Structure formats: structure tokens, C-alpha cells
Amino acid sequence: MSFHVIVGAGALGTSLALQLADAGTRVRIVTRSGGGPDHPLVERVRADATDAAELSRLARGADVLYNCANPPSYEMWERLWPPLAASLLETAERTGAVLAIGGCLYGYGPVEGPMHRDLPLAATDHKGRMRARIWSEALARHEAGAVRVTEVRASDYMGSMNPMGSYPELYADQARTRRRVLTFADPDLVHSVTYVPDVARTLAAVATDERAWGLGWHVPSPRARTVREMVADMAREFGVGRRSVSRIPRPLLRATFPFSPFLREMGELLYQWDAPYVIDADVTTEVFGIEATPWQEIVRATAAGLQARARAARAARAGAPARAS
Image 1 (tube, rainbow, N blue to C red):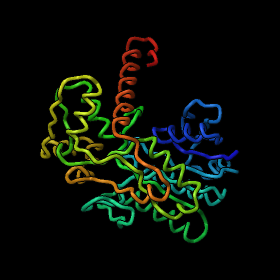
Image 2 (cartoon, rainbow, N blue to C red; image 1 turned 180 degrees about the horizontal axis):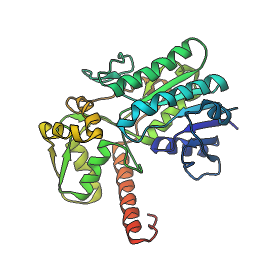
Image 3 (spheres, one colour; image 1 turned 135 degrees about the vertical axis):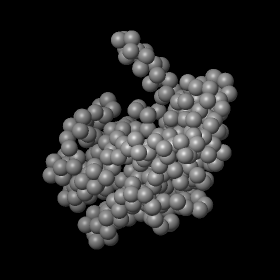
Image 4 (cartoon, rainbow, N blue to C red; image 1 turned 120 degrees about the horizontal axis):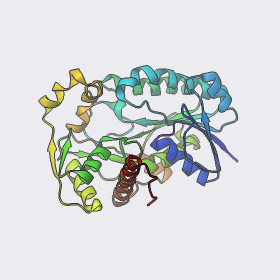
């Protein structure tokens, strides 16, 4: 039986662990809290993944080591990402496990046209430059023969996530509860979203295929849609009336930056919403046969997750357990 180690139990780590375990792979999931999904083949371990010695002990004998971690907020990236990435890279070198990184599109920075994997990593903000640097350092170790690495890059997540994990999901939740959805984006520009289980499927595929090592791979995603289209589809799934969509005036948004570290960090990424933001994953589909989950299935899963979270919140306020759907 193969043995894989996953660092991180957020939306991606959880989805990946369940997919691997359902396929018969023994999984050890490592987090600071000891959390993770409940499955007979999933072992949950509490540990500090920035401790390379401890992580190497936990990953001894592993075929693959996955980086599915993500600091909880943008303002923590500069402090938390470098030691975590360094520990994962050192662990891969010590144990011989393939290092498979769950990545994003930030490293490309502003681009014209769809984003394909051959574009240069030319980020203009510090978060994008950091993600580009993490990949570049891993790739240099790969090319030196010290490790085997690969990375998958996804756009903004959609799916059943807890806690909330993306701007498209935020807009979807507003469609559930408000007549007027407020967005940072131009609501009529298309923006790719990626379904979390599709990210997990792609990550599992590239981790164990020699053709993938030393390369970045984009996750197949449905046709890019406008925020207005996303909101309309989500409102229809929730069975609520039509929702209006309004863009927050940019001067008003920028006025909050001195008072909100999160919004100030988010401000560096507004370029992603000021022009079409489209992922091109044709190469991944050609090589691995992975295709995006149909959009309506993504809408249903996202709606179900948001509704389940709302029920759990109501039950918590009432002091009673939430009923399963």
C-alpha cells in the first residue's frame, strides 16, 4: 500500500486526503491542530511542519509529500510561508518523497490573455513574488538532482469549504443572504474559478507521474464567467430572487487600506479583477486526461456547503447540534 503525507487540512488537504484514502492509499495528514477528515486510512497528526526534523520523521517511507498548507490571512504570508516551504523542501530531500505543491496563479502577476504554464513568473506584488520564489527554489533543487518536485496552479476556489476560502465563494454567500451583492471586481469581466476536488485530482495525478516532475501544471477549470453570471447562477440554485451586483468604488476601498491590513494586502491583487483572468489548462487535459467538473455541479456543491455552514452556525447559536443534510 502506498503511503502519502499531506501538510494542511484546509479545503484542498481535506479533499486530497479523502480522494487518496478512497483509492486505497494510506494517508498521514499533518497540521498544528491535529485536524483533518475522518477516514480509516487517514491518520491525523499534530505537529509543526516548519520543523524539518519532525516532518522528516513523520514522512519517512512516504512516496509523496504534499504541500496543501496556506497561512490563514495574507498579512501572515511573509512570516509563515518561507520557513514552511523550506522545511517541506528539506524533508523531501531527506526522505526521497516527491514534493507536490498546491499552488496558485499569483506568481504570474498581471498578464494579457489566458494564463498558460509557459508564461514567465513576473509577479508585481510581494505575495506573488514569494510564491514564484518558492517554486523557483524547489525547481533549482529538482534540477540539481536533490529532489523531485511538481506544482499545480489553480484559480480562485469554489466548492464546499469551511471556513470560507475565496472571493467567488464570498459573492456566492452574499447571493444567498442579500438582494445586493457587493464585489471588489468589475462584475462584467470574466474570471476563472477552480473546483477544489479538481485541484486535488490534479495534484494526486502529477505527484505519481514522472512526466509531471520538474514542471508546473494548471488545474482544468470551467469556462470563465463574470461575477454577475456567477451570482445569478448561485441565486438560482438557492431559489432566491434576482440579485443586483455592485462594484465597491475603488476610492472607497483604497480609503480602508490604512486601517485594514487584510484589505491593504488584497489591494495588491486587484489587478486580478480589473481585466479578464482566465486559466488555460489544456496541456494538463492533454497529458493526464483530467477535465473540469461541470459548472452546474460546482454551483450545487458550493450552495450545499454554504447552506450546511449556515445551519451549523444557527445550531451553534442555539446551543444544539446541526442536522446533517
